[in-house]
Length: 246
Image (tube, rainbow, N blue to C red; front, side, top):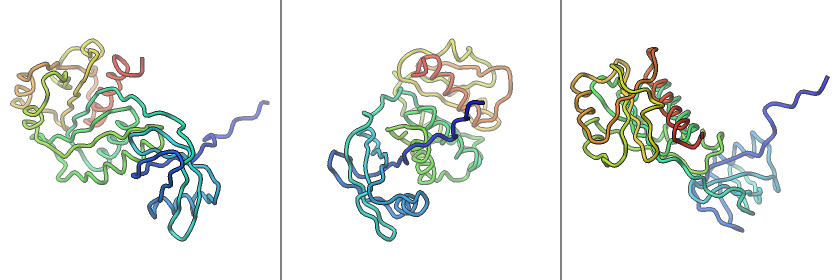
């Protein structure tokens, strides 16, 4: 019988760094990254690492110096230019911490350009820890190959979101009371997808959303979806219809 390939396939470690990257430059890793590469991955001087800074693409670097809780990389060459991200934003009502963490992780993998936590009447999350969510987005980007991080905004009320929104950006909201099939509603161009909390939008909130300019109510099928599932289903449907999955 043919041999089964090893899984997961061997690949270089990949890290997000906050320092700007350039050929022949040096990068000093933070203690956590240095510990991961040095003590967990057991990398020594000369080992190769892929790094990205969120703006200049992906780069090949080598371990140049190793010390206790420190490591320096020497940048050699660019391996990928910065990706082009579809201009789609995902606005979601935060749910419990584990589900919100999962939503941010998967939305990053799916390619959302911006994530906007929205406080609605039925939002159950008491606090949104942005530092935690940004760390989760970084880890997801490191794993899935993104070179640009999604921007995660400060939480805003639904009214503020609608008041501040550019009306030229199409607004698609998941309407549990019914709407156009998502695949038929989506159009090319900048988009804002809005998904409510567990229990959905209140009647007043629904009316406020429908009265906004350039808005379309969409249906995500016949089954009742959890809030975090609905958000990711809508984002995946958009990517499939008019995003970069085509």
